[in-house]
Every structure is written in structure tokens, then in C-alpha cells.
Length: 340
Image 1: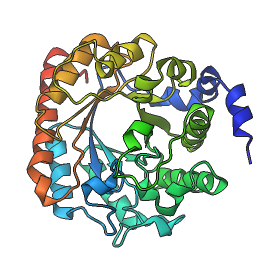
Image 2 (image 1 turned 135 degrees about the vertical axis):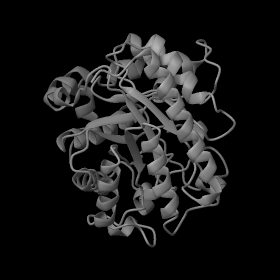
Image 3 (image 1 turned 30 degrees about the vertical axis):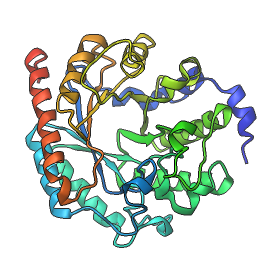
Image 4 (image 1 turned 30 degrees about the horizontal axis):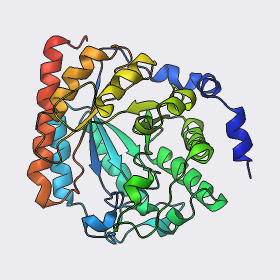
């Protein structure tokens, strides 16, 4: 077993960036070729405090016709990336014990990925390894930072990378791992890593992503709580998605100011909005704020989230959120015409 405590003291963010520079160089696209991504959940057992959402799901939940309709709508609106929260919705060959009933096989997932590519979009995997969002790991979510846990994480990252045919990015989640987020009646089992343990596990996870040829992508809210440590230890090679779901971009707000601080310190960003409540202006205002405040070369694109399961109850919300993204894209491209 690696002495992670010693490792974390010896490694630096700069050394990680230098080590994986050959992975990053061929993945950069032109500054006008922005990502317009949407997040879709095949698994909903990622939810923070899953009890408040009706408890752990035991069967595959998405309505497949709705899934298909959303993909078609995303393509129609000009979106070019689909980030898929996989969780326990896939019966992995390496760890089939994780899967819910009727989970898709890897072969079925590959069929859907090909459908996405044929629609002109890029599929990207998401496995959220935050302890606030890892109910999908089942028993292994109670084994965090053990040899068994590391083996399972390594196996899953490798298998998913293969299923996606070496995706450009691999989203690892890593958001909301704080005591404040877990100290509620909706959590039966509380795990919060911090200090060198959090960073040691984080470096392990991004290392597995890099070794398999993809670029790590994470939520950026660790910065909100530990700005100095983040800037000291977070490699520039990790893509950042700060998220703010409000409509008023007051720069004194921690969540908004983070966009400016990440830019000032040279991080590549994919800013994130949402349409999960009455916040129709979230994605457009995110685009308009960030295009003014983030350098064109470091602004890789934009990311729309819905935070709803793919069931008929949320059909109109997800389709409307997709339409809002398409509208934001049109407004952006009127100012920044795409060069062909």
C-alpha cells in the first residue's frame, strides 16, 4: 500500500501538471470551439442526503423514451457534450455487485454512447466520489480510504474509460464533502475526509484518470471553504466547474467571486448553471458574466445542470432547461461567431 501521508507531503500541484502535460496538449481545442454541455443522470443515488429524495433507489429509474427525447433536444439546441452520471445504473464487469436491478450492461451503454456521437455530441462520464454523493457505491461507500476502496475506484475508472473509448474528460464530482452538508437527519452514515487525507485520495483519483488517458474534471466548491489550500494544491491540469445557480451575479458572493479567483490564478473553467427551480436566467447570466471575466483561452465552455431524475414528472423541466442553454448559446455566438 502507498504511504499516502508521505506521498502528499512530497508531491506538488506543479509536479502533477508537469507529469501529465503530454495528456493535456492534444486535448485543447480552438478558443472559439466552446463546450456546451448538459448533465444527465442515469443514476440518482448520488443525491446529497438521499433520504430527502425518497431514499435509495434499487431499480433502474430513467424512462428510456424521455432519455432519447432529451438527447435529440440537446442536439437540436446546438449542445455538443453530454455528461452522464453513471453511478450504479451500469452493471460493470469489474464490480457488478454495485448495480441496481435492470441496470444497463456495458454493451447497452456503448450503444447509447454511439447514439450520442451520431447526434454530433461528445459523451463524457461522471462518477462522483465525494462522500456526500457516493451512495451509488453501496457497501464501498462505507470503506472510504481503505485498500478495498482504492481498488474499486481504480477498477471503475479504468472500465468506464474503456467503455467511453478514452473520453477527453472524466468528471469525478468531489463536491459538498463537508460536515455541514452531512449533519442532518437525511444521513445515516457520515464520512468527511479533510486535510491530507482528502488531498491524498483526490490525487489518487485524478492519477487514475490521467493514467487512462483522460483529463480530470471536478466541481470547484472546495475552493469556497479552503481557498488558500486549494490554490496551493490543486493542479492546473484539473478542469474546474465552479457552480452558482442564482441569477444575480454579485461579485461579493463567495460562489460568484470564485469564478474571478480561479481565472486570476490560471485555471481552465467550465462554468455551471442550472434549471432545477425557478431560475430560468441562471445559465444565460452565467454565460454573460463569465465571458466578460474569464480569459477566452481558459473558458473551455459552459455546463447546464437539472438535478432531476429522468422520469416523466420532470420532462418539461429538463427539456426547458435544454432550450434555455440553446438560447444562451445563440446569444453568445452572436457576439463570438464560431470560426470554421
